[in-house]
Image (cartoon, rainbow, N blue to C red; front, side, top):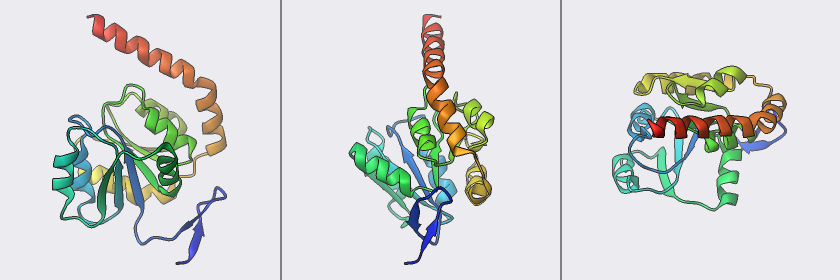
Length: 182
């Protein structure tokens, strides 16, 4: 299989379709069914990494699609390897901290996030991915089709995430505590 450069020094095998990855607990509220609906047409491969009470039903839902796999939990090393192979990271949950989104960005992987996620401001500020409607599969398909046109400054994004990450997490924690106190 011929290789192609990602433009950031890594060489990956060329694939017929983009590879989308999600790393998450598989629970209600993560909107996995919306992503299944978006990718059921085969526009991208999707690898779902993570466990949770929703994993069995997700596996049932995706069983008829050859381009979608839910592999359960993986080691940290395997998750990092998967991120290096990914073309895009998908997280439609209402993330407070978005740790997995930050990991994807630090690995130079553009992201697709929900408009109601707290990490959407990060994606908007750095223009390092796409902010989509929570329940519109067409938004996800359109974002995946556009991923090759993104030209983020990954070095600057990584510097800013390292510099401002602790403040971002602290502010998110304060917001959670404040909301919980009401």
